[in-house]
Image (tube, rainbow, N blue to C red):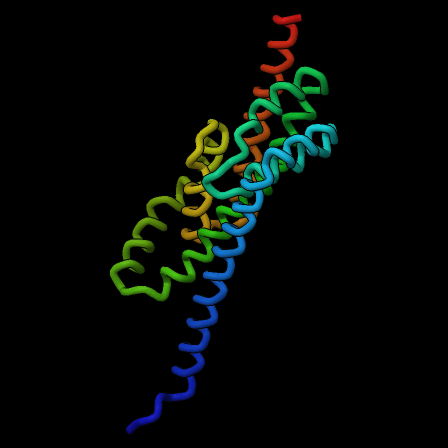
Length: 196
């Protein structure tokens, strides 16, 4: 019986470690998401009292939960935009939200490590999608983060799978989210003027 060369054993060990790290990343993000979802009513109550700091953490936590966002986030921005400076509300909420979206990105990176160890067909399809999407990823992330939609987590995961640089992902996500939340905060200011 022939013994495998040492460099082959090292590569196999590296693949196993990459797979384990990918699984741990995914599990950690889903655990945090579950905790955020379970404690969301309490979090909204606490964070709403903290003014701008509360807006930051509320938007961060809302975006950090995968596929289960905190429902009252948009309403919190509308209501706080009517009593605080809507420009600052939008900027702070956008920054917090973009940082929170890194959770989906991390799941995508972890998934990439898992998918990379699969068969050749899966690797071929991933490479094919990478070349098609990488050219327009920045515009796609900006537009998808600008428009309120529940599927942005999937876009973040896809960006992670496609190995988009995390700095580019967060920049374009932040640009879209800041613009979105400024508009929503000014909607709150406008609505309060209509009612009052």
